[in-house]
Length: 199
Length: 199
Image (cartoon, rainbow over all chains, first blue to last red; front, side, top):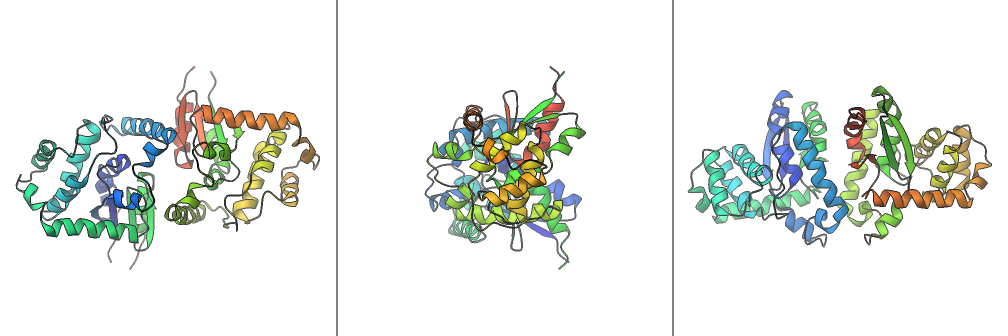
């Protein structure tokens, strides 16, 4: 009997930060395994004719999101600092995350990247920032080269295609079989669904 | 010391159904008063160049919303039936709700309308449906005329303007002073915020 959830996240996404920081403990408490799947929202947004985040397209929604993040991070004791630029380019981080996954370190790396971006306000497309994240996750700088390999690039494209095929339109998202849950607000519901599953 | 939350809802909104059915008991449990404010999302959406709900503009988001509603209603023991048309025209219901408020019956009326729409799949722009809702709320059919009065019409326009001025971009929303909370998912957080307030 396998109880697992597939966790789809995008490195540029504010609400993905919230789930990346808590999914492991919440899943463990329910005996659920987590499959970490970074993907890119850019191509999915582009297919809907959005050229940036909805939070930029609709200013009232954007203003709200930043205040919402600030309140939630404060309540959860998470550091929060709004980066100068939003959304950031998460491509390099996503490729590196797949390289980190090959060494079973994707969670530590992803947490370091999200903390750099939304805890410190750093630019996660900058190589020095990413090198520091690799270091914090106990990973070698050589992963920068590995992340440029055709295998990693094509794996990321594949995950993005799979996300779209699963009906995903935002991040974070959680899938269990054909059931889709969207948003950090649905993390508990998704895990409860996975935990209740008897295959 | 006054502890209160302003509850902004739109009769066409699926997630407003969820909050309308539970805000009173959740607020009472925290010693918080609720000011019920129906408003129209149409003019607010139009100002952002949306001619319909985002759930129609973006099909993946729409498909997800209906499944999400179905799951949440099942978990909460709420009847749920997707109406043929979405979004419905909630203008008549909103005006009637303001007339019902004059008799301190806005909650009962709003609950009857949302149950008709999303519990039974009825068309809430149809007068027989609204008459039945008035009856269920213990209100007189004469409110149909009262709802057409200039005072009610202008009050609804005023509330819609106030919603926009408060930065509201969706429903349900909750405000406490200048703090805005959006979505049924933030109901508890909004009420906790109101309860913690010492003026």
